[in-house]
Image 1 (spheres, rainbow, N blue to C red):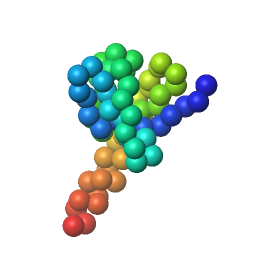
Image 2 (cartoon, one colour):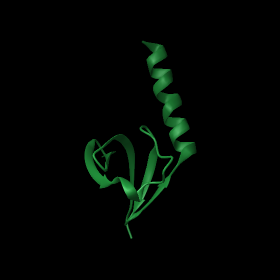
Image 3 (tube, one colour):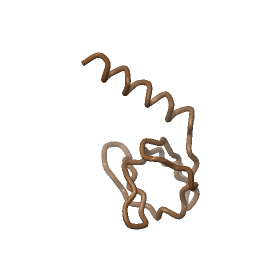
Image 4 (cartoon, rainbow, N blue to C red):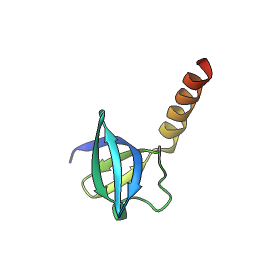
Length: 70
């Protein structure tokens, strides 16, 4: 089964909006772990979702560094 990497953009009305390669796609919120947050890096495999906390932390640091450069 295909593993899709994405970033949680937002939650709305029972859906998680996930950014995947620059585009957004809605997934049912109930397939995500309860502690999933906006900005988390996730891997979607069928109807299962894994949150990659280390990748999320790395991405947050990259964004913070970019903001500090401005």
